[in-house]
Length: 130
Ligand SMILES: [Zn+2]
Image 1 (spheres, rainbow, N blue to C red):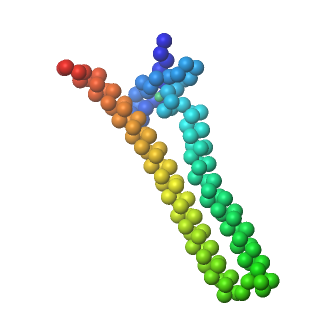
Image 2 (image 1 turned 180 degrees about the horizontal axis):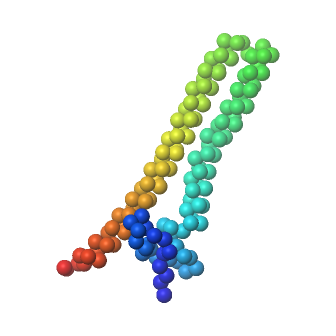
């Protein structure tokens, strides 16, 4: 006996997605799976810039220390800090770009779900050979 997905689609109709044994929702609507997917996407978006940011902070502190202790000349320190400013701006741009990409992916998933549902309705109204 094939169970039906418990979700309601964006169009307001019950989802006709197939449900795996032991689940209440189809893979597209499974809340546990969506949460896992969101966590994975979030982790992927955070890991590399997070590591770079940690390294940058440590390097910046080293340069501040070097300038204070006069092992790094002030003009050199100033240029290095300009470089870090640019680098941190690039990280921020990268972060926003990743967020946009993630939103785009989610929008694409929603669009596919809507189109799939619309396609099913069409098939019912106009079957092959009609
Ligand atoms: Zn569903």
